[in-house]
Image (cartoon, rainbow, N blue to C red; front, side, top):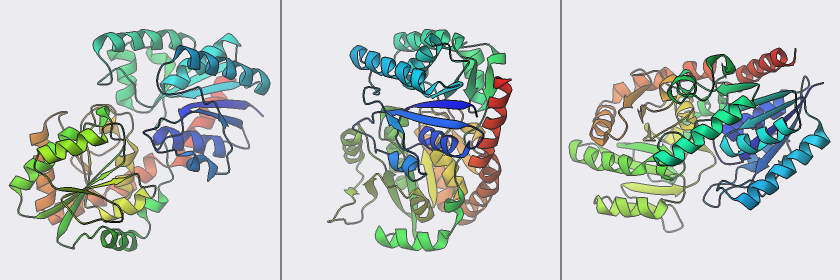
Length: 394
């Protein structure tokens, strides 16, 4: 039985953790997998429950942290080398940037037969200044030479890696979209909707708009709030907005809300309804989506945004920026309106169309489930990966 060492940056709430977990669990019995992860950032929700709920016990490397640290990164690198020596994998498969940098170097040093890396997005757009972005591009080009294959999770991402940033030649890249357990998002939606809206005091005539994700610069919550302020000027409908998540910019985003003249509240023991509710992290996103009428995303860059896949599984229409691989995750103008990045006026206009037209919301939501069930279910991911690994091991 071939052995796979799967290395992920950290167990935070999002697509990489879910996919590393599903692949670690469901590649058996054809493949034996050892899952290794780094330390969570203090501003992120720890999501080890995702892997533990599947009966997995991952190895932890506390020194493999999000920030660059010569001391910690070197310690993590040597720990990975020891794990490789002990486990003797046939394949080392890394997920995301830090794991990819340390894991591929260790695997290459120890001459592991197959080295694979999945880009769950990339850091070449909107994360850093031009000098840092150039540094990371050069680093990824060197790491690509150590890799047997690179996995892109969308057509757009493959284009970026091959043509826009020239990370590696086209023949080295395999496209394998992400996969998720989406069934719960399409089950008992009406019951979940009633419970969520009662909990957050949402009236039947109020249109609920949700944005789900880390409150960090790349998610561009400032644009979202500007769009909401403009939307409130244009519509006569009652709207409620829910910011689901937390992160390093939470105080700044709250300050932006005040500057825009929007009333807000936090969900706590003293909760009183307001235009904007900051809920912090909620694990049961299927319940959140059931309670919403529209799901929004204003990111500056994305790979395969889980929130949009889950929104479509919940039959919710979407307004999103058209960045990264988003156009490959939705059906433009059928399940989602795609907006130019940074254009809050266009974003507000798309929201307005959905807020003011009840039938349009229903029509755009109804096609989502069939689309994501076929394209993004975890069993498809597992089957694709098994076939991919077997080709590499021949």
